[in-house]
Length: 111
Length: 112
Image (tube, rainbow over all chains, first blue to last red):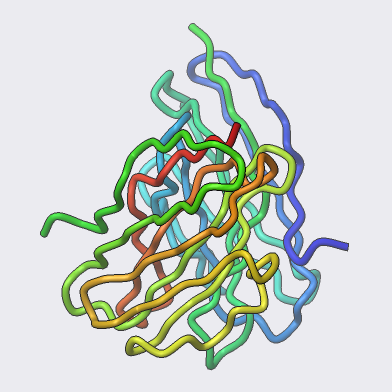
């Protein structure tokens, strides 16, 4: 079983739609959680951190459920420019810099 | 800040040749990571350094792969001899210990 699992998609949604991605992680000792975005043939870039209480950044909302070891990302009012692969990222444990990346969920927003 | 700088951007080489990938981390970042990304396996951590010291190389596929960090501003990943299955995008990333990592633009390696 992979340490971080995501639905690979693709998710094809029209502009303006709301779309949600889910991710599960296996290491209960993980302390830090992130969503990264990767455009085609580009490097991954940090989209947002995920906090225990949930957090929002504009049209993006991230949620964490530690009991179920589950992370989600909600995108409201999708734009064409949101088309990318979204990577769920988890740290290995408290005292390490290592991050474990999911294989990503591909989103395609169409006009 | 110029960000993490990797070179070359693209490398095409013949099987059996030595390949050296280079990385300059962001100034002040004390951790450096080498990743490999393929369609089949996603983003895999190969090795990471903290304060120029290798901490975890458990992701290095085999002895053909080696990495060095002689100082805080430079690291290399070497493959010798290269094989077609090494074809992938190799990313270098650095971190200031905040949990997040900044990635370079990657080196797209093709071994023919």
